Length: 114
Image (cartoon, rainbow, N blue to C red; front, side, top):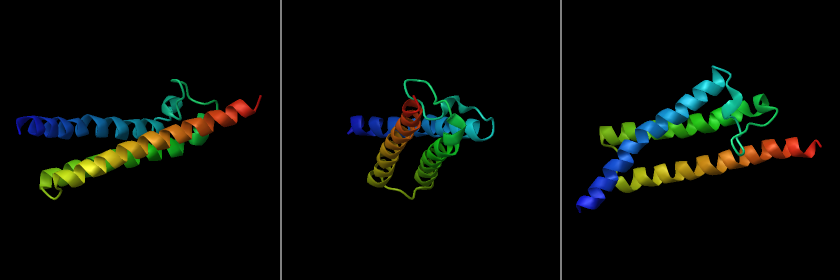
């Protein structure tokens, strides 16, 4: 019983830095015009990163806001454990797949130019 409680708290506390990181990344892409975070493949952005910046910022912003909303709903007391862990898990997978698809698409177009 104590192990599951500890894991729940670790998962909940982990939502804060992940949400902050994703929202900050979207902020840097949108407002600071820092395209070094856009569609990364092996740590490098594509040549035309500015073209894919709105998509990358959107992916990060949606995921960060979902996490922040889940945090708010947990604190208010509106979500059960099974529901918020399902939302978090789905959001993480969505973010991983969306970033992967965007990065492969951006770098594929670059590769086909040669």
